Image (cartoon, rainbow, N blue to C red; front, top):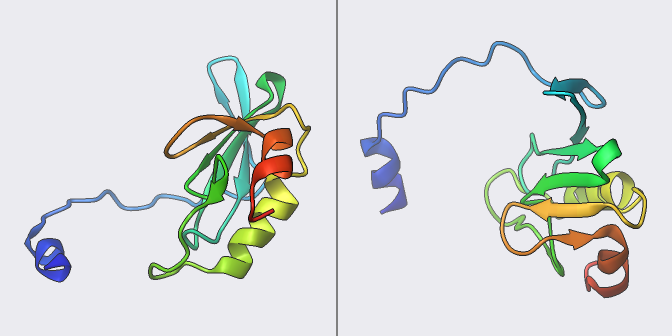
Length: 117
């Protein structure tokens, strides 16, 4: 059924004009946002860190008390855990984590309570 759904959709996706590099920064108004390459849930997974606001948007890489799925095409558990351990939980303990689903968290809370860590 899933493949039938995909075939019936006309997505009209725009062409990619450039890729975002690890560590690249961009401005969102007056706020500097840093790009972190966090593959695992998906090969091209990205997280967005705002140092001044002590905030990171992790998408589906890390959830409060859990992690994103890696059993779908392109997912990779080793890459996901590497992304979390080297890019996310190394941030200051009071960094607020906003995931793709569910409640917000903090680096400190995840280090203490997340069974995957």
